[in-house]
Image (cartoon, rainbow, N blue to C red; front, side):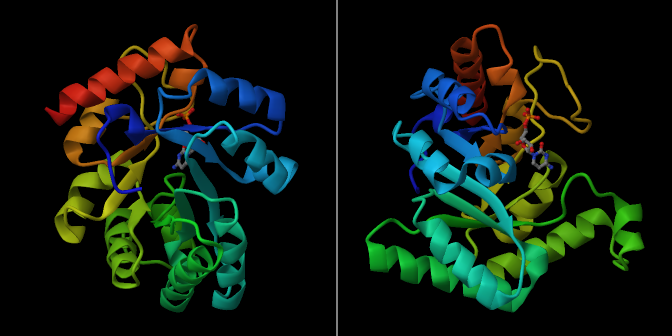
Length: 244
Ligand code: C5P
């Protein structure tokens, strides 16, 4: 997944449901209007690889948001299995450390070559945006959140990851230290016309793109809209405008 010709290709829609029919309904109504679908632990634990296959049969790129974090050998095995889902994007926790991240990248490349599929982009989850400075302190991390995110992103890049998942507030700092090619994917996006829901630190799609985001995960503003297809088109237009 290297080309980003179309603004809409930057949008990934989360399918956070254990209900396959609902997931298929959301995905099929947005085919050609978003860059792909994001499958997370809720969908995957309920519906497994068979459920994922039903969605990818629609022909939409897959972001396997499984956030692996374990010893290197176990993560390498999980990544090898995940490559069979044929994701465009796969993520792991950067906090799993250097050896785990290197093992994940090697496993992805080897397994993709073995079964003849494209190597997914491997992204590192830095610090979950549900955690703040106090939470980090509680677990013995003395860096503040931004410094810890920067440290983990730099380490992820050193280990060969293609990019990281980050909050919109961190995009500019990471773009500076990781360069133009490193992929930055961010959730917490709300168009000016949508309700914030439970997202607190939100930015608009245009603002996130201007700050330097490559991919945006946008859920409720699209699938919760009266006309999801129209909402996706409006967001793509905003991205297009922000790209200049
Ligand atoms: O509906 P909404 O646009 O808030 O959906 C955002 C998606 O991104 C959900 O799948 C949510 O779990 C995920 N996410 C998030 N905030 C994070 C990390 C992931 O909202 N910090």
